[in-house]
Amino acid sequence: MPEPKRKKRSMGNDHGSEGSTRMRLFQAAAELFSQKGYTATSVNEIVEAAGVTKPALYYHFGNKEGLYLKMLEEASRDLELEIQQAVATPGDAVTRIRTLCDRLMEMVITHLALVRLMHAMYYGPPQGAPYFDFEAVHQQVLQATVKLVEEGIREGSIRTGDPTDIAWVILGVTSTCMDLQLCHADIAPGREGLQRLLKLIGTGIATSESTARGEDS
Image (cartoon, rainbow, N blue to C red):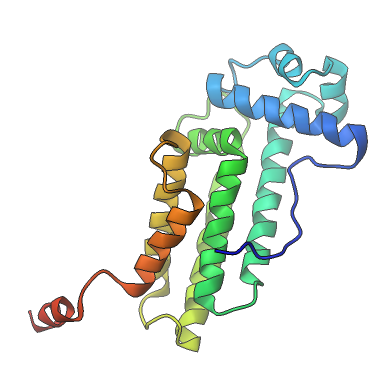
């Protein structure tokens, strides 16, 4: 699927050396938090892995808690931007849904450690980390998908049905591909594979004959 033109952001990617320092701290923290957990990761380990000094971390974020929260806040804003741009992509609703799912998959591949951390914190114990509203992040994706499905039903590119049910089917396949990328990258479908699966959802797996039998039963 061709990559639509868009304004891309990279988390922490400010101009100049300060942006580079922030980016290195974000990357180091995401790796360490995802591997060791929030509480078990020390400031010393983060700055050593980032190749910066403690004062640099304190200057930008105040402390480890500030770094953690800022990292997640910027990731959430990046996700929101990707959603907005996918929804605004030219084309019918089906095209924009596939674009949205592609953007989500791309973010997982690009920020693997950060997404792994977010999954661990959302589905697992808090590990002593400060509170972050992961549910709001999840709802952004769901609401955008439901909205696009509703548009598709109105325009006739998606058959009539419960928009939330249809959205869950789409996101179920997308989430499975994302989870495989996190845990079993060797067998993960990747971005191209996800698009094949979404196309399969669009065309359906039942033959007209089996569909007719189902309607008769």
